[in-house]
Amino acid sequence: MVKKRTTKEKLTIGIPRALFYYKKPYFWPTFFEELGCSVIISPPTQREILETGCKNSEIESCLPVKVLQGHIFYLLDKKIDYLFVPRIISLRENHSSCPKFFGLPDLAKLVSKKEVKILSPTIDFNKEDFNKTAFWLGWSLTNGFPLKRFKIIKAAYKNAWQKEKQAKEELNKNYLNQIESLERKVVLISHPYNLYDDFINLKIKEKLEKNGLEVLTIDALPFEFQTTFSHWDFASEMLNQAKEISKRAISGAIQISSFGCGCDSVIKEFIERIFREKKIPFLSLMIDEHTAEAGLITRLEAFVDTLN
Amino acid sequence: MKTYLGIDIGSISTNLVLIDEKNQVLDHLYLRTDGNPIKAVQNGLKKLKEKILGDIKIAGVGTTGSGRQLIGAIVGADIVKNEITAHAKGALHFIPEARTIIEIGGQDSKIIILRDGIVVDFAMNAICAAGCGAFLDAQAFRLKIPVEEFGPIAVESEKPTNISGRCTVFAESDMIHKQQVGHSIKDVVAGLCQSLVRNYLNNVAKGKDIQPPVVFQGGVSENTGIKKAFEKSLGKEIIVPQYNTVMGAFGMALLAKQNSKDESQFKGFEISEQEINCSSFECRACPNYCEIIEARIDGKVASRWGDRCGKWS
Image (cartoon, rainbow over all chains, first blue to last red; front, side, top):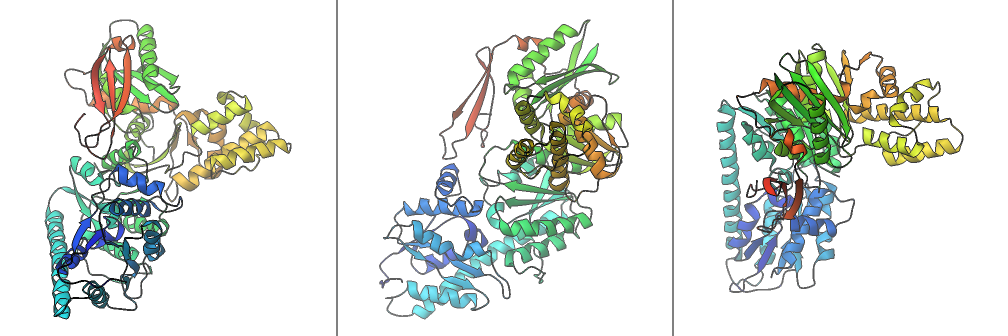
């Protein structure tokens, strides 16, 4: 898989800024850098990336996968040795990820050039602890290091987690400030790769803030995880957070799902019910390749008017 | 006399409503947009000017509909609002106790849920515009029946044919097929009305608590066949208010009045005579390549929009 290298040799790893990236934006870059690799992260999505993605995707793919494809193409044009596309099977015990995540490395392999290898650890919490998965990945990347390999990997893992944790704590702290503020609050519900990709969500957060609303994002909420009926890891997380936040003083909830998302088509309904039961205004939005904002703005404006 | 003008620029129709200070409608126009919103509004203003006699002063202008930004910039609107708010405002003026508004326009269909005169919930059609006025229009054209006669023809039918309502492409092939095997036109048209209603209730109004009084407005509410189909499916009386086809524009006129300031930004009826050109170009300052739209009145740049960053607008 990974060739032998000495400590002096630098490997360049490309990380697409899409899908799984947004789940752990700090962990992987730090981990690789600590192991002496240089990291290139593709820039935030822009039109060119989206267009390349759409052009080179299978029509039936969901929008986020098309976006990922675009980022992969961007990185393939850069000088990289490895393209990081993990095979994510499950991010929680007794849960499963979206089936499309299972096949991402294969998708990447199909489009990439021969010189670029796909770095694709299998992440499956049902079978192996995450630290073990990361360790074996680190082990293969340090193949050829003379000494202290064990120590280097351990330190890299620790520091990477530290960074990720800090960022999460920052988010949670921000949440506590927000929930205490007197402004009207709206919670945005979606997957991190829709919430934080401003090109895809047409800057929805900014648009709401301009209307004088405090915007909470669902993944920044600090509530303990509890199992739900859903076997999907991210759906369970979303449902859980939604249930908790619906008990707080919020003015409305907006759910964003991407066109063609199979999991969302099921979960959407259950999320809506949580807020409906509490009589919290709820808006469901669908995002797609189209860049015309008119439809989105109409719905947002009308929604803000109903809150008034 | 102080008056207020509301303009609703939709995909199929462009409507203008002029009200006085007592909220009385002085005049209303329902015009075809015909793919050229600017021309439609210019025509509308011209007609309005000819029809209105006496000394009037436009003290406020409001625009709504999918062309609201464009026309708002061109006529100098004081307030630009989304269709939901405009329609709710208009309907509540006539039926203050309304609890549900069904609005079907050319490309959008909406359900608005009101409680105690306040919009508490709404929904719009998602990606697909199946079951809207534009489709009815296309079918009317295909059958060579004026769309205005769709309603009376449908109401005559006693055994409406089953037509698929999920997708307009399927609906059309279903209609053609049914015609070819010998169903009468009135049964096919009535079947189409029922399928549109079914599509609306299953997709747009999905899961909403439809409580009476139910108000039906928008261009499609002119169609008595659809009204009848709604009444049959819901088992409730459907109220089609006065000015049903121009309700958005009426709501906007009310909002313009409510919002009026000392001086309106209205550029005057002269704009119907001026040369207005819109062009677009791609901004290459960053990789987003936004499409910038530029409106020129008599050669002078009046407004620009379409950028994500605000560089041009």
